[in-house]
Image (cartoon, rainbow, N blue to C red; front, side):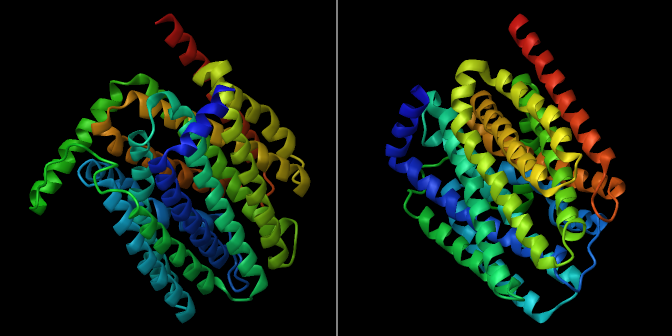
Length: 422
């Protein structure tokens, strides 16, 4: 298979391997940190968690960066991306240590969220920068395979980090602070790994220094408008971003449902529910891995739109069939399927955006992409909070998500016909 040959070539590329190492370490730290936050907010015995509380936590952590995310993209197109990875991960290591101290001190929730918010802010720069830098170390012919391997490997690393955090949390009681410190150590390792690449390697090639703050803000605003205009001139990128945003919404709504089922419906003991949630995360991670293997092969045979149609259509059929019983076994199967189709769609979306957006605009477009992720995820949590009962069993939510998957399938099918006729 050509995809297998391309994968072998990719792994021989020194700079690709080095960029991949930065991603793996950074996203494994993200997994550790996010699970630490989730278990502290959702599974602490003293907290009575509700869908509304989960939605509020997601809003606090993610929505503010929906406002500044596009500005991060413009700065990514001005700053050396290697330096973003170095200083960004160093800063996150320090901030994560601060979060651990706050957990030990049992501070008010708003102060804890403010600390977590700081770590999440830097994450916007790092993740967008990793996607924007990938075409600098891989030729366009192998970009699909690179997008199958690199972001998916990062997702798997985050899943593995989350699994490690679950294990630490289950073995030692009241260990949320220790888990956060583990994440801080991984952030530090990611920063050090970035030093293996030269400062100029990852671009961008252009970007005039503007030391005065007012000039930087004005340039950022102009750059944001330019990035939006550039994206509007590339309908293929716009269409796949819409589809991926809706897929992310579906994934987020179902995640909140599974959280509530694990917390209240299936087990009375918080530790048992936490263990099952860890299994669900691992199974979903297996779906991400299968998507990485399948996507290059599927795109070769079905095309980019064809593969996205297959992913959304599969979810539209299997999600209600597996979700409506509200039993652990079929829900775990659904977690695998949704991990596969969501990641398969993301790999395709990344590739379309990278190949249709100019390098000078790529950083800001991927930051906009990141903003869409945040808004859709928080929106999903808000909708879930309105629909879900306390135990998480909601036929209405499962049916709503199935209808959205069906609409995505129909929309991509129409776009595909328009592209062929045009």
